[in-house]
Length: 633
Image (cartoon, rainbow, N blue to C red; front, side, top):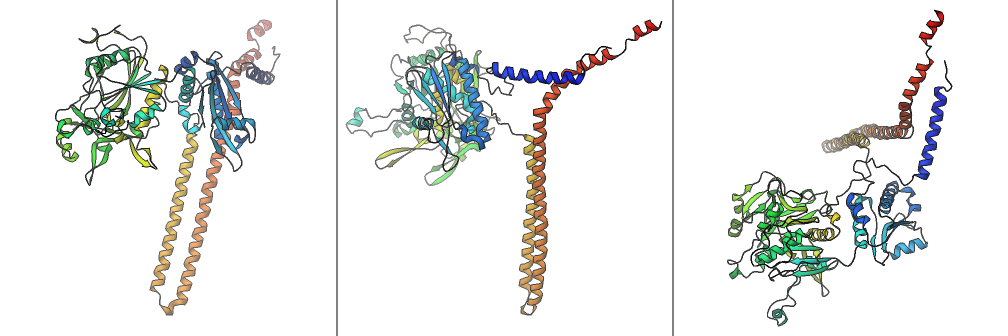
């Protein structure tokens, strides 16, 4: 038998080789990684890669992280590694356009002064130390963007925040948002009647004021013969009532050409009714719809019906009376899409007399449909004329027609669009080049309500020291701002989803803690019950005893007190045992997990790898029976 190497020496040599390979790869291949997480947390999405790959400016990402002060905060250390890992991904995908720099802003250092100068926020870990964890992006043309504090609570939006910031610096001039509507959203300060004092002044809508802080806002009159939508990064269409064919065609061509828009329809506009004199309301049309465009987008809205949801009814005031109104729909975080960055953080929305946005069949080929806001499955419809004739919601609900499922109030449609006017512009509408099929992706968000953008249902104006303050009532303005910010950016931002969380708790440990707490709570409740019973017995004993029974009473009280203290001591001992057992179980589980991760898994891999080797050695160590027989023969 020939056996130059035994199994144990071979195993030792393999272990040495494993450590050598680990050292070599960590020093020479440090930039390479394999992401095996469930949601590819450490890998950039295709949309982010596309944006980073075509940057027009060089960008420096400066990460200010108080690493020295983070020794006692393992959660922040783990999240800092996650952030830095992702920043390196951006750097690697940018072909040299992005550079990542890290700083440790220790107290009384130049790095801390820079963090303060950039406007980064500090967290107080102690009375003396300020903890910084923020990011500053600086472009080579001098523009800056900052994330003042990177908190683990916002980890699922981390890639979106980084990509949006990089996209904003890598682009050109200020984004332009257009608003096309027949409503007086821009106010009437320039109206000659107001300037002469013949009409009361009206401020612009709060949504216009808020958008103007970040964007260049242009108002487009849909009544002009040829509305121009050129040069817009995002278009906001509010209650398109009686839009002319030219306005509808301009909107169609804008979307087909790659434009992005929010189209807020409404079967019964409260904002329009409030601005219409009572004597004219019988002649006005308060419903807005774009049927031919919706059909081209694979959607439908019945303008004669509004959505009612008793489960989401809002309390409204009618004179001095309060009532629940099911067509005033108050939405919470459970009714919005948690996977879309425009809605994920919203927790309070109000839609009034909204229409239902329905997808026709399977929609249009090439378009993708994403519900953003939905009702509960208790929703149904009411006829518009019933709401107009019967102001009492309880009476109107007698005509309630349930859907039997959830209703969509807002839907995102994305993809490459086809014109709703395949044969060319409508009669009488002049056009240059008619686009039948789009060449670049577009996106449209369609809502069944336009009143959610009106001040009456989004903000409250208050006067303080001669200044008018806007008090936000809900997240309606936040939704408008999110849509404008995301959809005016690079096309890939529209489809950038929220990501998962890298902090994955041990479900087994959590279950153990819950079981132990259940036992602890039961013992605690039993203790309190015994205490109450003892107090009741003492009170009853005192009430039934007279002056001549004081000695017996004192003796009985002492006996009850001794008994209660004994029970108290025993119960507390049991509580300590429950807590001690819980800690021991968790520590034991943690020890096993560490053993498996550090030693067990490598040994398992090596063991599996050496099974063939051991088999071959065993086979070669057996005597050759045929040769032995030959010699003996």
